[in-house]
Length: 84
Image 1 (cartoon, one colour):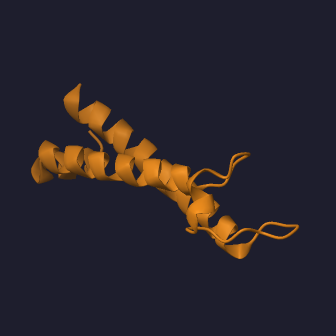
Image 2 (tube, helix red, strand yellow):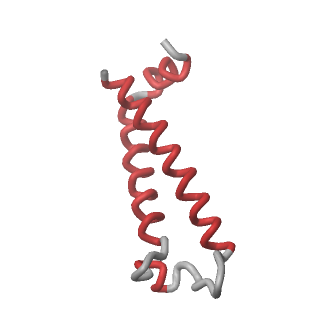
Image 3 (cartoon, one colour):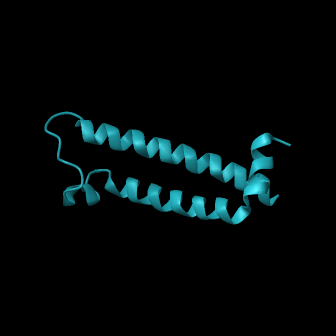
């Protein structure tokens, strides 16, 4: 068994389920903050409108969304192995 899964069994499944829930909420919030064709929630003032290019805040928001998405994916795999 992987050393990370040994740690997971010691740490407890409820903690990983709670962390999964929190990352899911964070991922939903980050995706909603992205501007799209209809500007979404980004038009409400969370992300400044860019003028002819990608604004630094939009790039950082994209990077943060990718990182949180990766953490969500890794936590999903860990939970799968814990519950299987």
